[in-house]
Image 1 (cartoon, helix red, strand yellow):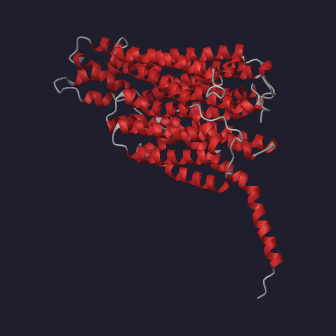
Image 2 (cartoon, helix red, strand yellow; image 1 turned 135 degrees about the vertical axis):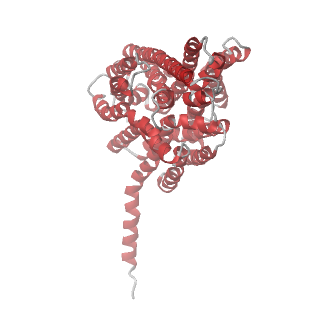
Image 3 (cartoon, helix red, strand yellow; image 1 turned 180 degrees about the vertical axis):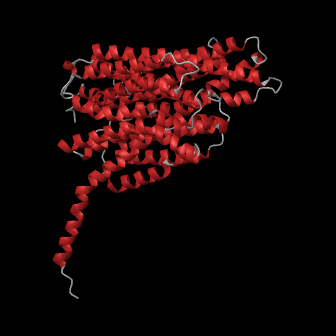
Length: 530
């Protein structure tokens, strides 16, 4: 049989040209898979925390660190990873982040203590930061013109979906297979994304890299860690203790030094010059307040719906978050289209106003309230959140020159993750204090009074029934019911306090967005930055 060289050449050309067209979209699939995985791990964990607490005998503070260890290292590693990617290559850093995240996820599932889990969650966060910091740069390098806008739109939809699907998927996996499954599912997804990255993503780097600001990274990370540590452990160690006061003072000192160092750096980790623009300050304030209010509140709502008072299973809890998450998914695309027709400050301010009002509508629950008492507040807060997320991303990069958009996006993302970490820690301190105070009042003069501190610790971690089962058998059934009612009363009282605090945080962000995000600050029309 005679072989025709011209036909072979034609077929090779056809085969080669087809992947050239498809590879850019396959690279997008790989990138958004990584983004989805790292973002869903912020919310998927919440509904599994009561089960994690029971299996690993974890305290409330330890459970806070399951969330905070991840968000802290994610926030701290974002800008460093971006600088590293400019230096050695974005594909290398993204792929390395996938490997670290996937292996850490497997190790999380195998963890046998809360300390081990928290340390591994920190490693996960580093991998997540490496992926998050390079993802948008890879997309911007791969796509041009109208296709770039489509690609960024898909990323926005992925971001909203990850936040929204997290509680439901977490509940489904925890109910069906145990809490370990929320980490194990990352393994095949991570392998899929890694193969796609290695095969389809083209390498790119900054031809004139600025280097890595290691000193700034260490100062910022240490300051943030010390402040979160103080907030998480303040109630246990005592707010007047040398340990807590020392951590707070040192955190502030390190942040001041960080600001001084960054001001005099030619290529800083944080370009503080960006904060001269009121609109950029407003975008960072919105990111911080959004995360420290509604997203931080998710943890405590989960404890309330599951082990704290209502006693639903993880899957049932995930389903009951649908009025919030469903509204986010529905409203998000609408808000994205409105960014070209409505001034962004109205969307950001109005959205956070909706979040604040929605959370306030949750206030007033009592021990007899069912979960339906939260539905109206859930829906209003979900709608408000849906109006905030799409324009927030465009605002952060739309008010700076294109060459500084990577730094601006990274700083805004850092404020988002720091807001969750600080919000969970701060709200946790308030919640612990309020529950402990109310429970002591309720149990005063009863046989359970000497055990109020231990009961309070269990109640805040959503382990009320476990705490009651460990009370000495000399306490009768009627008194057990009295203790249970007191525990539920204290938990609900703590939740009502958090509703007021987080509502106020959201309203502060709303006012800040209205007065700071000025249309005149935009370098390009909102929605047309890419």
